[in-house]
Amino acid sequence: MKNIKVILLSIFCASLIVSCENDDDKFTGSPVGNLDIETITGTVSTDATFALPGQVINFTATLPQEFRNIVTDTVTVQASIFTPGGGLRNASVDILPGSNTGTGEISIAGGDGTFDLTFDLKLTAINLKKVVPGKHYLLNSNTVTVASGNSGVPSENDKRLKVLVDWENKTTVNKLSVRMERVGLTNVTLSGGSEGYANIKIGASTYLASFHNDYETTASDFVATHAAAISANNNVDVTAVGSDLHFAYTTPTAPVITITTRPGLTATVTAVDVVNGQATYTANNSFDLGNTVRVSNAFTGTNSVYNLPTGGKIIAISPTSFTVALSGVADGSATAVGANNATILTGTHLKGTVYAEVIVGSLNDIPKTYFFSATKLGTTSEGVATATASSPYAYTPGNYRLKIGVLQPTHLATPSVDLKYRIVLRYPDKRIEIYNGTYFGLTATSGFKSVLQLTKNGVGDATTYTNVVFTP
Image (cartoon, rainbow, N blue to C red):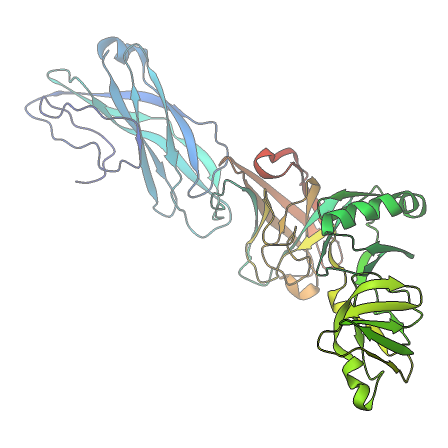
């Protein structure tokens, strides 16, 4: 068997070939006898203007009507793709009785190592279901040249929109950095503690988040308590979405938002009374019911059993005392010594993670692939927003823009570069979109340029992506 570009037909090689892709050895045969050979010229077309290796494109094969007036039964036509580096792909399509056209699909062969290249698409062979006695047909056609390149295509995933960013000469010193910026929204995911407080700071203003029952309740309580003040003081709208706090803003620059566990509160214990396994400590305090409190070195000598070196949970509280369970200790009382000897353990307090408007990929992740996820991964809602995090992802619905630039002069081959770049989107429904552009005059100080915008709508099975705008 071998690849061929023309087909030799005889009464022994009539066959029905269904539409298929990469059928490199479908058409074989040898003429028998002294046949009349006729070359017909078909037409091939495609709606693809740019395609990458591994991508599948449509093609339409059209045969002359004069030929179909003679050969009226099903015929199978082979289309082929040829690349400069010697790559070859074949695919076939049936043209049914009563028609002179057929549409099929063909995958793009791999090319050479250049960022920009082209491939040729043409019709190369024909096979008749019912041969014409004494006749042998050859097929040629026009050639369609389609632009291509050496960039890869992200793999399929029915839960993610994948975004690949590639650029010219990435294997030399050109190191493009990419930022996926959520427009007008910073997300805070509550986590880490089962009690206590955290300070959420927006600019110079600080707002206290108090843990209540669970993270979802804590988030909604924070909004109910502070939304009006945050809007008035910071021009930011805060809403609760599950265990997340969404801070929406309209200013060109994102507000600086941080969350920190409130430092451990302290109090001075002056005495303790133990009754039926419960110890009530006398102390003026601002603790809360459910806090874990440690009492260290408040009692000495034989009274050391009243200390709580590993902490105990407060089961009753008043402004002048707190009570914890103290099993195994006999009823009794004691006087304490020292000051600030009771401390709330902040390790169990409310925490959180800020996912800012900029998600940055690793400098070593070349080419760079990012993705938008329909569902949360693990316990966090986004990828880690640091300069060293590879393959970050976005979960929160909203408007996003992709920016490109460089961080320092050593990341460019020359001080100023007209750098070609390519953005490949692969949608959960397998659609592929490709955008090519050039960042003219790229320098270490020219800043990050916005080149693509899109909107993520919804989460889970309801996720969609709209409003894609390329701004090269």
